[in-house]
Image (cartoon, rainbow, N blue to C red; front, side, top):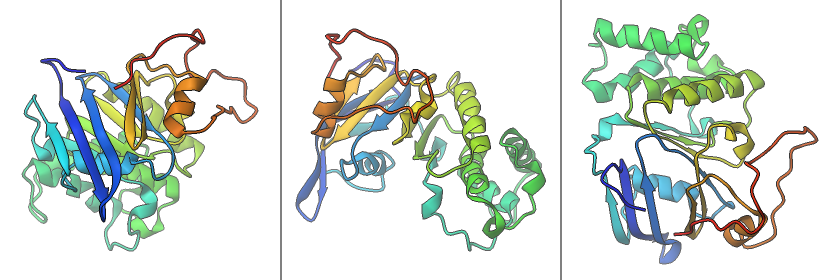
Length: 258
């Protein structure tokens, strides 16, 4: 998993809390047009891996490199909306404007280009009519789209999303699916998710994280792959709706693990 065109390279990464290891010897490479879904059990280390990549934690061992030279301000991150303080006293427009700070803007001194970029982003996410609504009055789905808008306002060169479809409405899921497909034509997208069905059409690579990382560059999984990653038998359930969750593949097809 290496190459001169890598956007991000993680090598031999290990980390934990209070001497308890959470991740061990993790290797990962993200390329220019990757759409990577990171899945795994609760407590398996998915969000911890993301925090390490974002520089919010310091690894015990290993390296995190950005061979393409992406600046910190060009890394887009969408947190889970359930962790966002809705009582923050800002209108939606102003909250999204903060996403322009990494591009050189200052609170109270945003340029016309900043305001145009934010207005365009709000329209793309069907939030134009809510621009002057206080963040505290947004629905869960609207808040999730607002967090995505804030990340996109900074014109990121790579986008990370942590559980973007958790507890959101159908409209938000549809808008998000279309938007990420469009973005992935230009930049890599990395999604941490428990609901891979929402991105089945877009996912190109899958990483199963449970202390270690099991990488599937084809975006295909077998039941054996899932059992190895989760440490127990796993079934994919379509909630009674007949649709293909993942690409069809032979039962004995070998997936590349790292």
